Image (tube, rainbow, N blue to C red; front, side, top):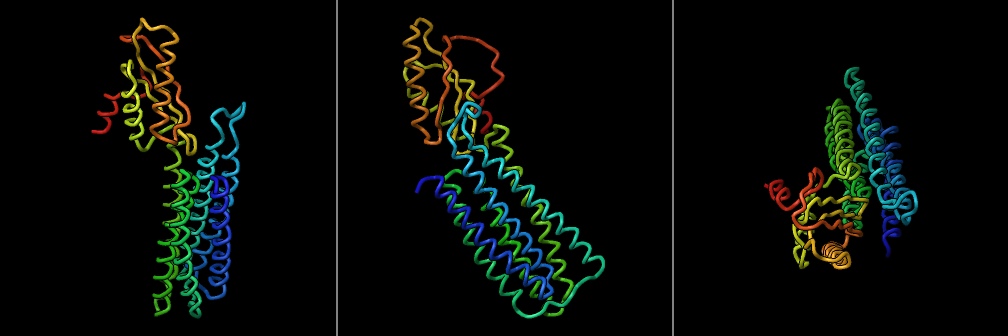
Length: 307
């Protein structure tokens, strides 16, 4: 199965599973007087929308490069993850104020029946499976949108656990614990939103979490004869792809053709090191060239940064 089909399959599974869970939890929360289950249902409802956002972003990101997007459209997934964070944050804040109001005014209705317990346990089982499935697919496709969605599923497991705890205590007479559980759930949702927002900021700002790829680049350049002082190395992440800029120095007495051939070898060596690297721009300089190079990394800067 190709990338776009696998991405769409994961997103649609999220839409259908979360849609069914959200409907069940909202209805049970309303009719059986559980604010915590209702809050969990609203949170799961936002997951339906975030899965739809992920689905749309996946289709956009698979478009080939064009005149106005020469690096491709893969960053649509990072933008989608940002949208997900705002949706989750809004849901969390809304639930927070509703829960605070219930706690302050003592609105603690008695939970009816056992369905609130059963639907919460079912939610934990389904959310665990969704997290494992989406995270595995997200890692396989190097998709920030799917990984963000999976992390949201992981937090939903903790949320449902908190809801289950609150419902159980409420059933044994501590009616106020249901409202407290709903309040804790809202705080967890807000925290999840901040984490998703922070993670996707790296890609949109051309930042890199893992500097190991730079070492792979320097190792690749070292294998090419005639290359000196690789420097000003910059890696740009666009979705699951990497684009690399690098300056190298060669013997100043070489012909333009010979310098070009060396640059081509450097490009091929770097691309061969990591299948996520799709293009390399190599700038050739004469050996001993001295310039002010405020951007990028060399081996010395990389080593000092890893200490």
